[in-house]
Image (cartoon, rainbow, N blue to C red; front, side, top):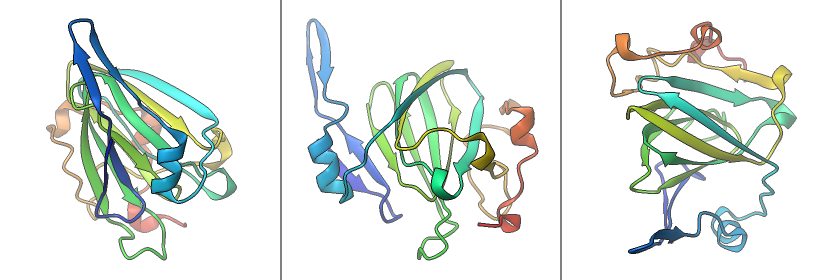
Length: 181
């Protein structure tokens, strides 16, 4: 498995070794020992989520506050997405910076998103199945968001504004500067 730390400390890209033959492929998508060695602590994933979305659907930027914060290991099972994380750790030298990673069914990359990050993705293919492991349960009262087109974050979602589809709730998300972290 190839593992690369992004420009933001603690955020890693995992590229599994894929074994292809005439039957199809096999890969190890998660190994607790390898993960523990890289991350530096024993993450216990407690919830797996999966979403199906069409081209242009943008989910995010979401995070949970306080004791309900979540670390995530995300990947695409089918299709292609642009995955985005924003560092919300005030003490971090990369506070307010973001990383984008293209996750596809072909490249099989996974992104580890530590606690203290906002996360979102936009679907670049006709459809996509997106899967993520979380180390904490969903908590509606702790759920927060940042508007996807925040002028300070300057995220290039690789789609025209009129092609982006977001939920009514996400349309009401505050901008980055107004966050009370």
